[in-house]
Image 1 (cartoon, helix red, strand yellow):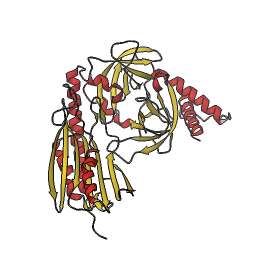
Image 2: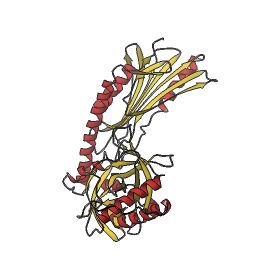
Image 3: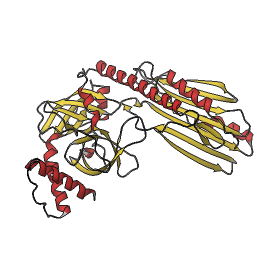
Length: 441
């Protein structure tokens, strides 16, 4: 069904361009649907091929590449749109890497003009570009509409993939298009087109362990790339721009997360014999319950995380928050149970002792303390690792175990990447104040 819909849409668009919108419509062609689909795809492929590029990041060897992605032409001045993560290694170390754009007409050196960490976009420019710039769609597509995407999967060559636009994700703080289509590595940065051949988005990622769930960046995010002054491309300037965008992302994410947590009021979720504050709707949450018969322990788990958090070259995910609340109840051998708890807590620790060698992260600083919140006493360990080149930004890991009761325990884990100390302290305090033994029903 999707092939027939797409073929019809592309055929209508092609006929309109060829004959003019005010001319009488010609009689419909009666060739079989598979043949119409084939012809439409061939026309689309050949028409767009000169406007599509493969982006290669090289470290000096002209015959090899370090990173590969896709891009597409959006202006007669040679502007190309791609993903930030395609050119991230160049942003991180422009002295080591350089950019190259390949198309059907040849190989061109590319210059970075701007990038957007949050939306995972970048704007490049090449001289001597051939092909017709792709038109940005004037309005968002309708959910359920047929689409095609282009890119260079694994560097094997230009590929066209059919799919369906399913609207936008309801999770996360970053806008993402939901696509039913099998994008592959190397297609990142390629265009997503509607039936009229207009750009509605940019390929960005796929769902792991999924055959056909992929994601795109809405085309409306492209305009901002042109509104900034072209970047200087030395290491100092690119680090400063990365630092600026990280700080802005942290402030905006903090304001949104804390505001939405406050808006939830006293809403709670039940986690076994405990209750915890209900996270805002843009968190993706899961729960589980397990019975360990031999140990006579019942374990209940509630975990939540932000979706589509940006990644920065050399730092990994930033503006990332993961919350986990667990409740353990034991019916016998409480002494052995409490002896096992410290080991359980450290199993959730994600901050490792990395030797920074003057690079991305400092070794973590960890502190243990005993905290009382209302009637609950917690033993808590907090580890923080700073971003060496981005002052005031840290990765945090909180592990807290309640020690107020003899036959059950609550456990809280809070992991945050790319935040200030103030933000971490506010969210950690809110969790420990609001995680408590559930009221008897």
